Length: 130
Image 1: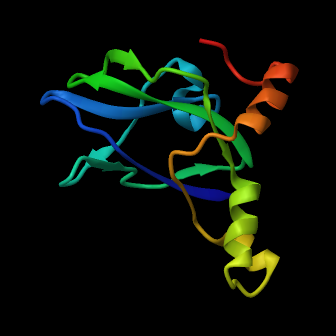
Image 2 (image 1 turned 90 degrees about the vertical axis):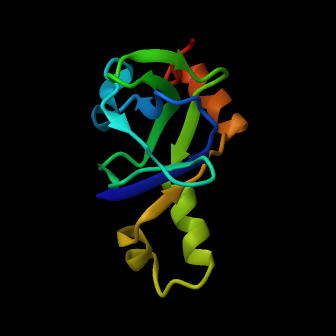
Image 3 (image 1 turned 60 degrees about the vertical axis):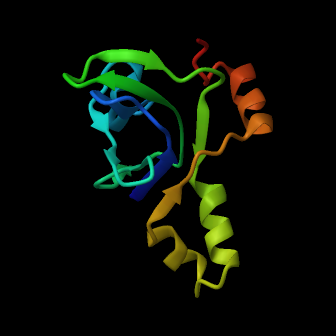
C-alpha cells in the first residue's frame, strides 16, 4: 500500500480551491473531484491526508474547483504521471536501509511529468486524452 502526499504551488483567486482527479478510484476515475488540497501561506497546496493506493502507477491532473466543489478548470497539457516505483528507487538511493523498507515508506510526489514514460503509456492507450 502506497501513502502518496502531493504538493504544488499555485496562486488562485479567493473562492477557488485546488483538487486532483485521476485514473484511480481514490482520485475519482476522472469523473469525481473528491480529493481537495489544503492551502498554506505562500500559495502552497498540499494533501492533508495521504492518498492510499495499491497502484504503483497512476495518471492525474490538478483541477480548479469552485467553493462548492464543482469543476471550474482542468489543468492544461498531458496527464501527469505518478510512477511510485521510480520514486521509491530514488528514496532508496538516498540511504534507506533496504528495498523492503523503502516500499513501506511514504512517497511524496511533486509536480513532475515523465514525458518519455507518458509517450509509452499513451501508445498503449493508458493515458487519457484531453
